Length: 267
Image 1: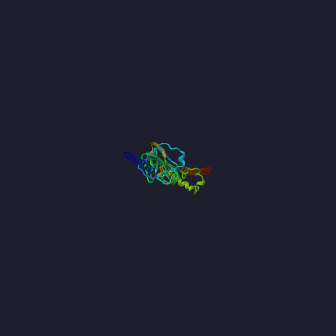
Image 2: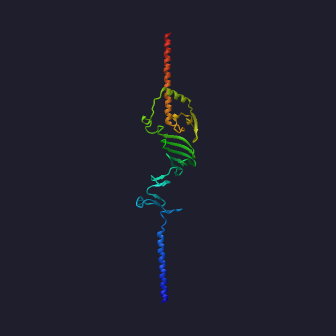
Image 3: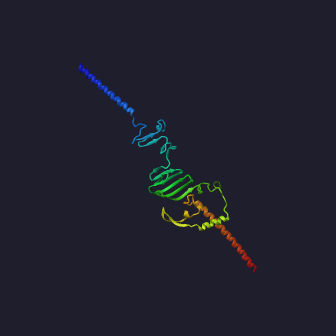
């Protein structure tokens, strides 16, 4: 009888011990939920990941393996993104060999380089398209791993914007005088024109201007780019001045002929 009581007590003890272990295990699982929303981990892997309200966009959109889904906005080095994707100034987005970067009042789309706020980080030669908000200009350049040779500038100040040749878009309008034409003709005669090949298009001879030796009338504010429309306007003014000079000479010739004829009739 004693043996039966001892066996019963042992059974009750073992059953109570297992019940405690199971209860403790369940309690530990609940209290140490992983991963913790406030935790910091060296590495966190997930088949898919979603960020956003539990009762918002994510409820109606399934997420696929390997996808990251953000219901509102994603910021890179900014804690308050104002758009769906916002990257802080002086950073870049890379797509293959292409970089999209921005800093201050500029935006750049370039191959093989990007702007970090103070300098260009380049890996190889490529091309650059710059949107210059300060001058309302678009600049296309050839670059050589951080160095640039300006090719062309399109800007409203150069007269490329629609309607920019109308009076409404201009100030200080003044009709040129005869003295202006004389001065501009002299300047044009003294200006050198050149034959050259471009470094980015070797072997192809071209004719044209060198910015450092050209009048300010045809240059962009950076003094390194000749603007086509300004050059056309400058040449048109010089041509008109030349035409007026020729007309004046023709009048003098006719007057001289008339005098000569008068002298001949006197004989």
